[in-house]
Length: 425
Ligand code: HEM
Image (tube, rainbow, N blue to C red; front, side):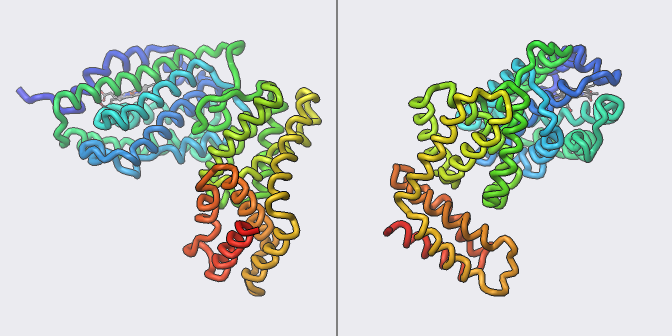
């Protein structure tokens, strides 16, 4: 008798959960064309959390089996993000229990990527084996919630289309890998965990309990984990609008981080407007913490100042508590002041001119002025952040601003000159 392949074992072990998943009211509603927009988007968010976590965890995994099974072209985060961006302005709230199970499962995947990376083969099995069901779901989507490949359904278009071929190839790699008994058992446990997560998310999402729906950090960005966000949609609309203004003032964010930078700015904005509820002292503590997190990743604190200032300006037209507005603008002021004291505005202007000259007369960059102002401010703020203990703040921002692969040597030299001038000022 033919012995069982690795995927046979995974399939047999998860058959029961899959049958329960297919018998949920969620699955029935997908099949008969009555699933609503909240459960549909909710599922995309659950998948975005799981895929985002798995894909970034796999970058650091060197286990031979997991490395052999995983291929970068299997990534799905891009399609999921594109679909969620399509729904951005509609501010569709979440079923919190669905998001909770996704975040808990994501935390376990992160743990496994360090403690027992072969177990991640189980997550790959579920998330890519699901292309068989996705082919069925894809054919029902138009009748469901009016989405199509370019409008909110690029994930299902890919996953239920070429995804089925990719799954065949992936399943061959899983079957040709030599996985010892403890490895396959770990993979089975992970497959059950992920499938159970999706099952529980289905139960939590449909039928929709409108009274339980809430905005979460995942509503704004699936990569932002769990933090408070406001519940008033008018305030959230201002948060999204403010993100667009911050990105207009500082194109660096999009230049460096792409659309992911916009999503993070949305989620950060949601969090920032909740901070005044903590009171001034705790708010200041949280902002100091944010400085260390963001500045070491290339986002100097002056960007947070601009964000806070614009939020304070824009929120005055909403029902947001007026007493909180001065706390937002006051926090922005303190950050600006710390930069001005360390690197005075005149010195920044002087270096801005040096930077401008380095663009050259024929640079043809219509946004040259803005680029030079932004660069001088980011470097000045990073210098302050470093003084305040964020050791790699300057390197983190200069690595991108002075990249010889993306900018001319003259530009890079004047960026480095600006760093020297500000550091010694
Ligand atoms: C309406 C919901 C769904 C339907 C109708 C559905 C349908 C199917 C079908 C027809 C198969 C092929 C069975 C076979 O070849 O014997 C399948 C397999 C599978 N589905 Fe689903 N599915 C659904 C949801 C999901 C979800 C949400 C996931 C996980 C995210 C999932 C994961 C899997 C896996 C892992 C397999 C097995 C792949 C393999 O072993 O080759 N399914 N599904």
